[in-house]
Image (cartoon, rainbow, N blue to C red; front, side, top):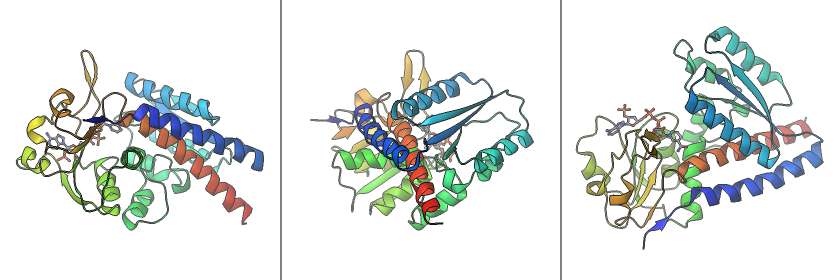
Length: 287
Ligand code: NDP
């Protein structure tokens, strides 16, 4: 029997726990946890993501500071805003919705966010701490995937995990987290030769390529766990990177799209924001 990994239900559990922590934090410090959300331009998909993230925050009691800026906002203006948010003690986390318009240097903007407020886990510091296995904020999507594997009791240790995609925000940190959990990890990308045969070695297959239905049954070992990070827009709505219909019968567990990794990514943003606030709170107490 294939288990369908239900990201919506698990995300709801994460939010319930976060709501309790938010309330306790408020009682102990008299401060509401705050997340600054920066959206530049009018990309409709980004606007939807931001709306959903803000709604998650509202649900758990996190206050959001909305910064919606026109598409022609300059790099200097954005950097100034990040500096202000870094300095604002009411802001515990900063989310800059990507992609930014073409004229913006994303790397420079992300690098400007204080690591302790980097709740997306995208800065070089967060990634460096991930590599070193040290305490720090982990990128939301890979963290959400790890949480799903854990919740569903999926054994990672000693297993062969194959990650398709090597982006800095998903593929690379995902491979690091799987490695830290003692999987043997293979990372695939657009230069990988014979992708199906590499994927067929996977006990755990995580796909984050951004290519609709790239992975079909020819890529699956019987009993594999298949995690589909991909979000592609088709005529009938969202499509994953995995051809769910052909793959599900072979898999022991699989995430759907939508309703799999997406909600968990947002839940981890909430959790990272709470953790950032708790850390800031305890640092203040110790100084
Ligand atoms: P990127 O475009 O930054 O990276 C895609 C990666 O996939 C690259 O490393 C690329 O290889 C590799 N790749 C692309 N096509 C192939 C192929 N045919 N065979 C093998 N490898 C391939 O994307 P992201 O990592 O940002 O996102 C990946 C997908 O996940 C997207 O659909 C995105 O929308 C989705 N996403 C979903 C989230 C969620 O919450 N569910 C969160 C974040 C992203 P190369 O490096 O060689 O170019």
